[in-house]
Image (cartoon, rainbow, N blue to C red):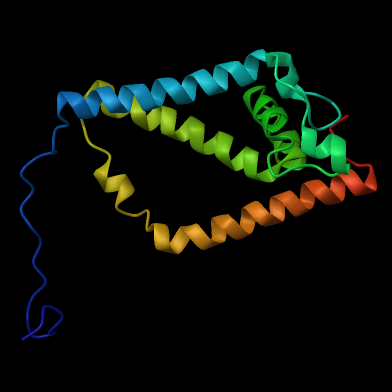
Length: 164
């Protein structure tokens, strides 16, 4: 007799209460949340570049050598600018400038809230993470990342890069 036998009633396990996180798990949750918050605060501190990339230079970093040599944006061109637009609340500009970075900024914001919730409440996030089947989401995210890069290349070639 299998567990999906129609003659057998469906049983539900007893709820013994929420699983509490260990102190080390709460610390990791707090560190992840603080890291995501630091990234978003840094992005909010920066002024997004109106040309679509180069915002990272406000941090003292060099210009993109790939773009300077080829004239085409690299895979990560525009990500800091997109994060900055996201942190300033301009989600449309963030997605237009670099779609993958907009999604990553959203995930950073969600991770920050979940991390702080787990750290403060002591509740684990296993119920949320059990729905994340990486086999199901990995390939679509890789395809989306490639399409986002192609979008950035098209914007650069057409001269439409940036948000004005």
